[in-house]
Image 1 (cartoon, rainbow, N blue to C red):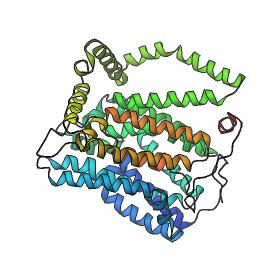
Image 2 (image 1 turned 60 degrees about the vertical axis):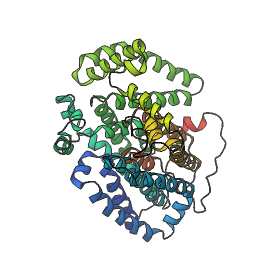
Image 3 (image 1 turned 135 degrees about the vertical axis):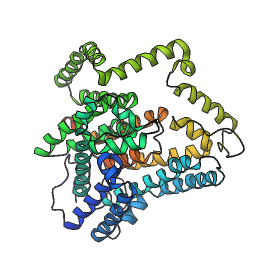
Image 4 (image 1 turned 45 degrees about the vertical axis):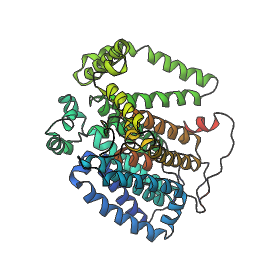
Length: 437
């Protein structure tokens, strides 16, 4: 058995069937997060066969893995069933453009629930197996984005051609083989950045030194993508990790780390000027300036030139018409603009449906937290979920298969044969973090 108090997975030989399960599950996840794998594999055409292979490979290794995984998340699936029932009733009566709602609020949640149980079943095979799965996912995902850096730098704003225009599908097919992702891909990096560093921390030898620059290049790809919200999520994730790093030290060590952070902050004006001089990042700087000055002068509804503020307030007004069950197709209100998971959820499903899905996600977080023994990993888990929640206020990602699938996979803890949470050993404050760092 693995020691839940060690900072690294217990080394043990991994068999052929386990490697097959890892490889097929990794390929399935990469169809969501890797632009190259997604466009070459045509999404579900690769995902479904990959998950089928992983299913039989996992069963070959442990016949009860899926049963134990489902039992661990049984409350999540019960709440999700209620949510999907309400969604299905909505779709039955939608007469105008039902496809948009069908994918966002029905297909994506089902895919997320499938990924959750598949990765949980894989985790039942042991710490070494789930760790290798996360490592392969990290390398495949980050290498995919790192390869896009040259073209993102050469052609500023090229990633924006994959959304919001009549040629977006053709542009995506054209640029995805070079690693240029859609908007959700960059946002997902910002949300999953802390869990990615958590996976890298448990690597040993050359793998860690190869993973670190890959993650840095992935961060750079997000920053030069010109997507403001994705870049904001990256900065927020990094800032939270820096705070944890400083608090992990004690005495002179903490003061030294704090001094490093303070000295680094003195370089922010120079970095601001430098970023404003580059075409790749000037867009983000100018947009932030417009938003902050506009909102402060005119308010959220009129000062936000992206219209998200006005749309948010408009959706909240629609929500007030049908607060409990939400928008009733063909009867009341409008569907909303889809730029905020919070307001759009309230419009579509009201308090009842929104709370049902939110409670399901809260349970996923709680179960994951209760089965994660390493204190540092628990901190990174909190960062990932907090950034996910904040990003969903201004982005339609609370149901997105790309974001949730990656977050589920990178934070999936090792399973317990009896479905019980792991026990945590009490240690002096900061000792676990100092050992980890």
